Length: 435
Image (tube, rainbow, N blue to C red):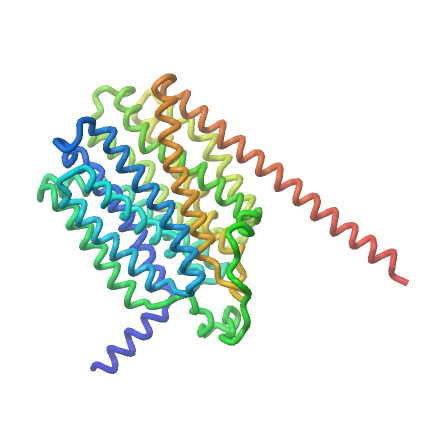
């Protein structure tokens, strides 16, 4: 019985699907935890600070700063040490401890000291999670895989605030934090079972994607060289733009809906947001599967996605009825899913695992870009919103991201024409030198 159980565990450890499940669970829990505490913080901060809204913003900034630092440091460290499991387990353990600590804090400064490392742990989860998937899946299958993870991300983001409010009213202040820590412990156990992924392909059973254990590899790719890669530039700029837009929606759309529809309460607004997140959760895996099947140029798809998101975004401010607002949110959710899904598979094409394994650094840059968007978007939009309203805010941000997208498309066309001209010149030289 014990032998059979050990064999089953060993088989489970060597399944790429197991890695996909654990990473999806980690991303889901990370976004769930982020949203879980949002409805709790205003009540927890009462009596600890004079201005709850400012204190809440400070806690959010601390979390984003921690994510930004943790993602690139953990990603780079995992490439240098060639270890992902230990760092991932450490990140999950830190997340569990900080989540429990947040529920036990008695002063605002203690909450800051707990929120900052919680952001660090989140950065570890994101950068190493995507790296693990790139370790075990070939490029032609990453579209569907990354789409599934994006869907898990959206579901966690959608479920967090509602579940947090429910747990708070049902079990008190500490209940959401204890629940979140328990979920993190479950994922930590799964992570230990899976084992290390960074050398996965060296022992892969598939000869097409196997890498010889003795095959020499070059040094880890530097951050500077990655930032000089056009695919990385496109991915990072697109990520900053799209996450900034999503952060603006999370921050300002509820306020806009309350002003546009005075009879609308928080529960109805939460239900309306389902029209945004549910299509994203469904369409993301479908988009990934389509990318795997047709193998399009992911640079063009990513740039086109940012263009579409920029065009549709201002339409959110136009509807005068709730039904039209829901329809526009569904459309925006579909467009956003199509735009976000190609970014992570595109980044995997930058690294050749037969030469080096720097997926940690690549996806660390991706997480940094996402964190920058989450910080810049609300800060910029709230300032504009106070003076001009929601429509002007969306138009200004959309015009900025649209300009970035058009610049990237122009550069891509230039690079394509230059490469095509080089090929034609080489063909002409070959014809002229032929005796």
